[in-house]
Length: 394
Image 1 (cartoon, rainbow, N blue to C red):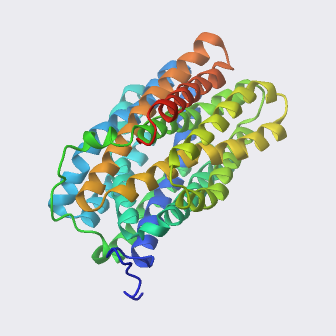
Image 2: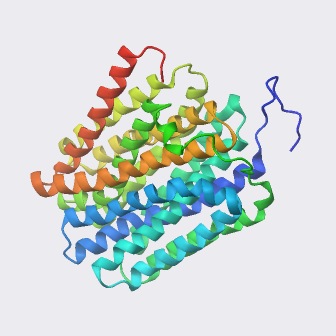
């Protein structure tokens, strides 16, 4: 790679491929493990007779873990280095992920969720910081679209693996653990390329939530829908008549939608002066798709078609919001902003599974769709209100 791509403003205009390959490969391996693990754990708990509310509560521990990990990740990376922190996180997530197989008491799954998702949160924050730091400003949307595409491929492979190997025995846990450990390879190889955090952030990381409220609200909704959807959709799908493998394949279709739409959405965001319009449009699509699910419960094919487009739009909330952050901040401030962004995502992952699980228990199977529609409806109302009343403010 050459250094001839510097723009007039002093920022790089070439794409720093060694860093991108390392960070994207690492987080995609983790994505495979999470895509396999979330439906796997929910199905196992369902077989044990655990209620949807308690399954949602256990899934929500992921968000609590992320909220704890987010504010300390930047401090750890500043103290011991980005790559070294990521390697420790890989080890902890692999060990705790395998631990679910040996934890025969339900209460044991709560501390395991804390460790597993705390470690994976650290990996996401630092990988996204690494990717954003390596991305040239004029092509940030494209770079993050590539990141989201490869990550979505990992998430799509996870449910596909689940449909092939099932939920019995140690095999699915071993496969997930190996996938996570593979993430250490590109991190270690490119450890010298990882960005340095020589200065501490200028403000507390929570301050960045209020700099871009439309984007952080978008990632809150994305977190709620993703965590609740991945964890509880297999239960919803099996209860309305689909088989376990059919439910897993529907998740795979959703992951394919995530994968094929992210680069076009990233390119589109690079050419928009106001990304709020794109965020609002994707939320409207998410709302419409949610309301359509109960109407499609008799047809696997129609549901798959809707989930293909719905999944791409929903995942775009994260990609476009992250691109917006990267366009405004650099260095340790960008790392802190990534932490705040993931913190909002984590709050969503706490609210989502709990609200959706409770909605299923209270209002029946289609409570799954109504709860998700409620999250999107609130965001559409917020984004429209800000566009109408706040003018050019973000």
